[in-house]
Length: 296
Image (cartoon, rainbow, N blue to C red; front, side):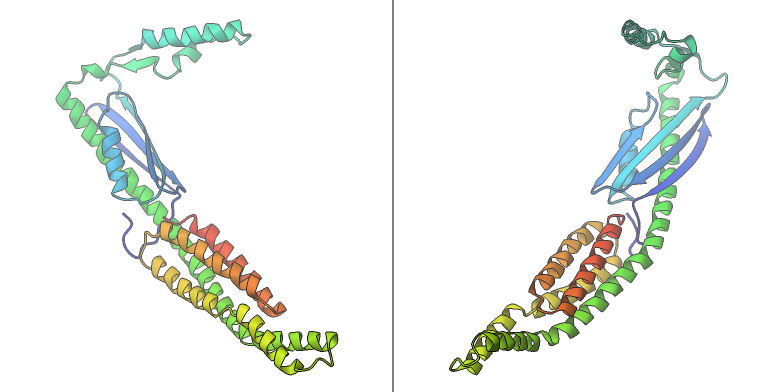
């Protein structure tokens, strides 16, 4: 899997070519984002163990992503007998007749011959030892294609790292801003409540004491200290995870925790400035969440 410290994305491409035993082949490996690791292989018939070898090789390099490999292999001129698979051709002709009856145009000869499985090489002409050696050689080229894919994904990771760290820095700055705004929240609540009470009952006995008690209760409900402490801890956790990849799944979960605290901060806010900071914080967390989707 990706080496510690080498952040990897999940999108990339790799290719490798090979030749031997009277054959030539080309391997293309692609990957896109995925919650888990999923490996798919398209290869010619006759290479039964190649899928198992490919999956093992991919699992040794990647933790997440949808990885697709295509193997294009053909016998060199003169090294294999080429013919038509009559059984496969009959199946295609049966389907073609049904389509023609439904109004489709009749198939052409070159169109039929281009269909999968119609033209075949005499792979059976290979003795078991040569067949095994050929499959081993192709598997080695698969390794090369996967290495190229890994390098491509690490290139994406190198491009992602400054974006991710920049967003984490932005979140940390907003948490500090929220702390400054929150320090004035208790006094703002007390002043607002006192003004409202004075308007409603200016001559009520014990007004000052009631204002103090009610304002203290409201201020306690609006206390965001715990949310700010957890956000600070989440920032530290995000930095630690980015420094020790692969950590995409953990970062996914951490984004949910970030957003939960940002939402609670906004709901507890009693001042316009703190609410504004909370909304900016939610926006930054959402941007980070979108970028984390690309991290292995």
